[in-house]
Image 1 (cartoon, rainbow, N blue to C red):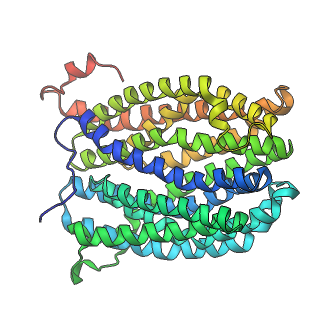
Image 2 (image 1 turned 90 degrees about the vertical axis):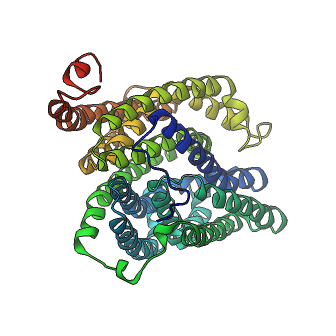
Length: 472
């Protein structure tokens, strides 16, 4: 089989594979955030801070519904990477088909629920009255596009599982440009306000999934199916669901925890809520290098675990941790020095200086904790790649507990006031990173890595003596 744009990561330099694989994905994720941020920047500058705050007030809710869908797609991508690493081409195709069926059904059901429950959920979060009407409208438009964004993320996950991180980037860049053009058209030229921003995003999402689907069929041999490949089997669905459902639960629990934090934020009023929306939008960009590093580690670990090359999984983990430290060091300096001008991109600083000052303070606080945030993604990527389904649930539960307790503790009982909102975010990152490290030690290090060393004591360079001279 001729395999275009496919990378086998079971041989060659781990660092080279991880960096080369992650770079196009990072560019793509940044474009995806530009795709999302275009709504916020254009609405914030041309409609006003209330409309900007309304879009921000929906982020935890839309994240919840996206999470319920995307976890299954990501689980299918991991299973695909393991079959690919084992050179089992037939099961690669069957996994793509079985996961694709799930991804057609689940987003439609979840989208219908989101459309119906949007007003109730916004009221539950104590959304300021100034935001409520526009926020409800925005959530309902996003629920209509849930199928499109879920299918695009699923296709991207499968392409990455096969070692192709470049192709999704090209279509994402194109759809991002379309989204920005449509935002300008529907918000600035035709003054449709929040409705125009939502419509621009919806049309761009549709374009991204259509172009990615056509390309995958035309250029990637794993997407050209024979009649015999169309087998919906309980065993394959179980493999996907076994990984995907815990991932969905983890993402959903994180979304619920974010909703809990949003409720605390909303209790401080529109000014703090808008400042928090500003920092939240900026930190969506901050997450991107960590997310792409984690995704690269997930594919790398999945392929090598499928090929039974456990020592390469460990090497990838160490390499990822070193890359994360370098990224964090740069980002900390940027946020400490340039937080205020970056925040000014979203809100007019001369008209609303109090919002910009508060957002800049928030960025300075949270940037101190970036290494904790990065470590979550490094460990998550490694454990997800080797199929640790339980970790997803553990990580989600820890974050929920943290988000429900730490913000109230910081803002009320410890007397930090509004600064406690951003302090609590950093504290939860550190807590999650620590529990992720404990899971790594107990699951991968003890159950898999040590077992591999014991079985390989006579092999070089990965024998027992070699292990005893290294640290984890």
